[in-house]
Image (cartoon, rainbow, N blue to C red):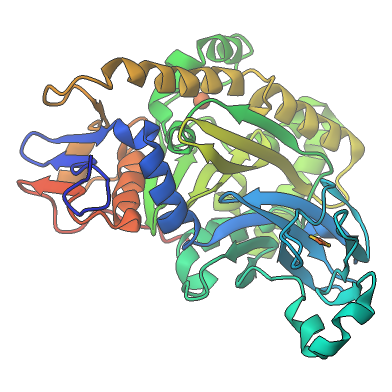
Length: 452
Ligand code: FES
Ligand code: FE
């Protein structure tokens, strides 16, 4: 059914009512293949996308293959040391050029007709090249590997965009950039991605993955087994001093301080006196290097940062990088990596890995609950798909709107971070009639959190 703007999208995808203090999302947004396609064209083809961390391709000739926004890419460091993102498609007839997930190679050879390319993009060899002689040297030039139009890096985090006109990365990241900087400041030796990828499929729309990460409201009920375990082991479980920030441009942040600091800072004392001294020494070093106020943000808070549209950084139980790749309206691929201080001692490293696997890993204490919720929403919303009665096919995200009206900072157990996400989604999708605003919408939403 064509929508009011002629795009085939239904109108009123997101409905805010500031008289009734309600915020509703039309569930068609999670299941429509038309909307999925519109997102591919208007979000994934236009925005900056997180590709990977530069330490994943630490040495010249290292490469990874990775699909972003449905497009297969080669992420590599070329023989000269430069980071590259090539379309993983043979310039000859379009075949997937590199079929390995990772490795080290100066050359990529297409299996179809054996054309071979250097990791700097040049053609290295074409079997029976004489046949092309008459076309002149421009022929080889026109057959170079195709680069993703834009590639920029912030603190080791590599972003690409298929849109040549996308704004510069620092402008796009805005306030989110500083939280990424804080992550890289956790250790004076710097941070690196550890080998190994956790890769799993979720039968749910990618936006449910973002909602779940930005939703402190679900924590106690969904993870009640884990919460019970935390309580039994004497860990403080609280909703106090936990806030949700809309950082603008679709980025958002949860700051969790109620449990007494970033869990990775408080791990080490659990070992014994030596480790306690080492943690205190690390904390004192941070104070000296960053100043006490910044060190407090870096060391004593946990953060969950969402960088629009595909990056989640969980700085809680270790530091996990999670990348979302939409495969279909009801299917998302999730990839996760662990970021850790370079040269960390073996005991701390082992505990970090154990904590990642046992908490945010796909077989851990928390993530399977989240995936169950994520998939259960996708299954459940089918029940209301045919119901055209007003409001029946909408999901509610109104919790905490009153704080927005009052200009009070929203808490993580409210749904303000999700509202920020959806407002940006409507803007990014460019559906003129998509956002119906009525009543007393506040002039200015709370945005940003200045910690510099
Ligand atoms: Fe790759 Fe022909 S398609 S060499
Ligand atoms: Fe959860």
